[in-house]
Image (cartoon, rainbow, N blue to C red):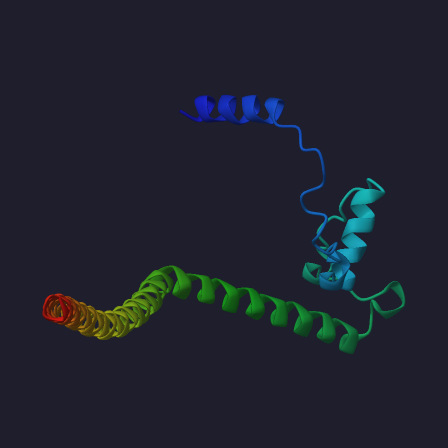
Length: 181
């Protein structure tokens, strides 16, 4: 099916050769207004065909004290404190991931359910308002059609009366003409 559609599109693009730019009336969009500094830098990197920077693992490193501080107990204590802080950070991340895997899908389902209910409520209100508007318009239409019918009936009645008056007037004129002779 997709191949058939692609073939039809290809055939039409071969046959259709626009004679003018049908988008010329539109202003040319300025896409750079939406770019952030990070995006500009990334576009420049891509344009220069430079490779992407590797993920920095520097913050996960546990460096030992420098060569001059190998015998300094406070330097070693700072290194131990740093490693304990990183270990605790990783433990908290693991706990968060476990909580997310345990409760995250349910929270997402509840969120989606609320969004669906809100959307359905809005649609129902829109449809009820639309229905009320349609009933009002239909009532107006019925009223106008009825008035048109009454007007047409009155016109027919008046035309009949005019025809009768003309006929009576014509008969009277004939009678007057006969009396004159």
